[in-house]
Length: 378
Ligand SMILES: Cc1cc2nc3c(=O)[nH]c(=O)nc-3n(C[C@H](O)[C@H](O)[C@H](O)COP(=O)(O)OP(=O)(O)OC[C@H]3O[C@@H](n4cnc5c(N)ncnc54)[C@H](O)[C@@H]3O)c2cc1C
Image (tube, rainbow, N blue to C red):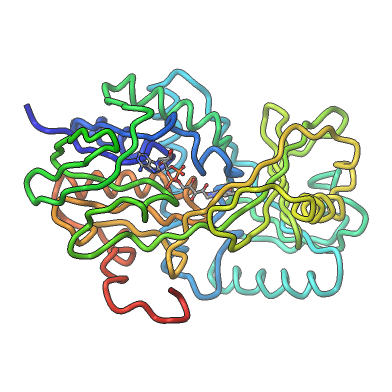
């Protein structure tokens, strides 16, 4: 029997990769130290927003983000079919709003950049924004309408992906923590904290923000991923309050889900592995949300949390041969891991199948970090 591909970590990246491998006829085993799907991916907002988040200096990443969004509808449909569950994929679009002269200037610059890049975006007055989304408040004086950006309910997705992976015949070991890998071109091995050794045809490291903790990656050393904390607050929408679109303001975004969850995020803090929810973090988010959608004031608070984004030194993902024989990296997805799940999973599957690194992931190879670490970004 052929050894399976061993995937370390069952977040959106590990589960999606396992699902795509199995669909391609390649056996896959996922190991997760807790329940699969309860890491950072569970704590995200589920926005699939390359056009909203286009960065002035990140066009290579934009191309990857855009390509992944292009693959999302078929990916969502495949997961839904295999699992029998709905993932609440929504293509309603996003409003980027401004509520004072400074934020108007900022979004105007973004709008000009987006149109220079050929994106299909529209400039709206405050009233036009309210026509589109009546709960946008009176302070909002301008907006960009981004029809092309979508969203998914990441929690529904994760449960569906786990189900789909199992339904397709994948093997899942939960409550199993990987301590290290033993690289080998033909038969790499992962070693669990219980001392169990599991041999694979390849090992895929998809442990998100914890990827750096996996030992044994000789000769390259651990993957350079660090945590960037994001606090979030979840409100429960109640009629007549209802939002149809993701709304992004200067200090907070609001992502409404079809089951009434309204996710408001997110802070961005360099605090190591700290996941404390702070009064200041929540205050900033609520104030930022209230300024653009005052109706949130009366909604009940369901939940609050802090998640850790897995960031690489250049904030782009780390996908490809890890530089240790038999080991592939699929991590460092930072703010875009939900968006990037289909392209990452499908291109890693191709890499396993063909041995070739595709043009999509080539710019994001771990090899870009193999030189000396610059002091400013260590
Ligand atoms: C507040 C916030 C909002 C976000 N919003 C969005 C968004 O709107 N859109 C978007 O695209 N992205 C968003 N992101 C980013 C996205 O959540 C991440 O990029 C993505 O979840 C990373 O997925 P992952 O599978 O790599 O990590 P994870 O989901 O963390 O999965 C890693 C898994 O590895 C397991 N693991 C760890 N160590 C070991 C070990 N030693 N052995 C075995 N298993 C191990 C963990 O238990 C976990 O299940 C957001 C992130 C945050 C924090």
